[in-house]
Image (cartoon, rainbow, N blue to C red; front, top):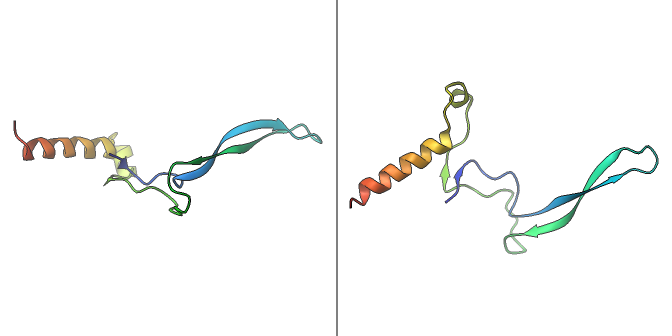
Length: 85
């Protein structure tokens, strides 16, 4: 189960970096060289939506709380209440 905010990238993305130095000025740069395909090839989603949406907010930051953890605990409590032992 995925809780929080949408992922920062699509299911298929270029990742992993290889550092190299530019020959003219010696500045170090990185290039991604590995394509991660964790979905089907024609999946054009820009992000993966969470099962339980619980985005971070400034109010939560100020109160030192974690909306995702609160959502998880609420879900566990509701699941336990719906399925008593």
